[in-house]
Image (cartoon, rainbow, N blue to C red; front, side, top):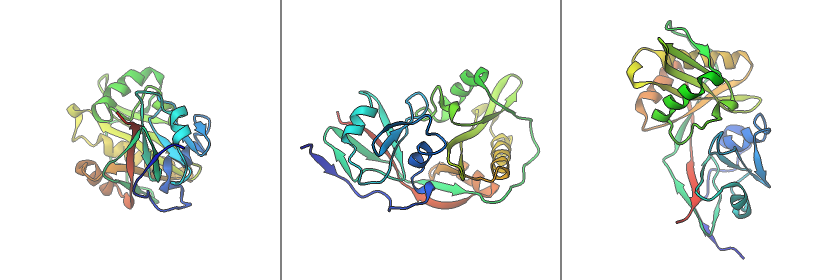
Length: 239
């Protein structure tokens, strides 16, 4: 019998899809990307390092061995396992702010934008490496649409779509190159994408660290409100 380490219970059981966003995305709009093992699923490593559980009481030992190769690690959001198998380590980070917007917002005037495609991939990876070095992968753009603002020929800012269900769409990878801060690019892209998602009949939401004061203040100015704080963990093999 495999020994387990008990950890603090993760978030309460809930049927709301945003309380378990990795799992609900992998079981709905991203089901075609999901690598599954029973009540555990993850994105391919070159898409995103995210793993979801149906609920906290799932026994994850066999799934971890099948889905997380040696040297890899995965992140969990909203729901973590109540028991961690021997040989694995669950590290808790500070909870993230999960923010939501349910009505259209004003889109400020500014530089034009366009939808990004495969030809932009290297530029997107270079920009996100400055801000999201662990989370944005070579095929992350397969998760949704990404939009960018260019300054001359350089990619100055992006915002895109990541986790998704039929009713909710996460706005993600909102970032601006350090040489182009303070020009309203992130505000304009986020507001534009927010309204576009709402026009589709879905609700936009996003996640941000409370420590990222600049970004959180921007989202509040745009009109996003805190829905809840949500737990965030890393799961990796113990050394």
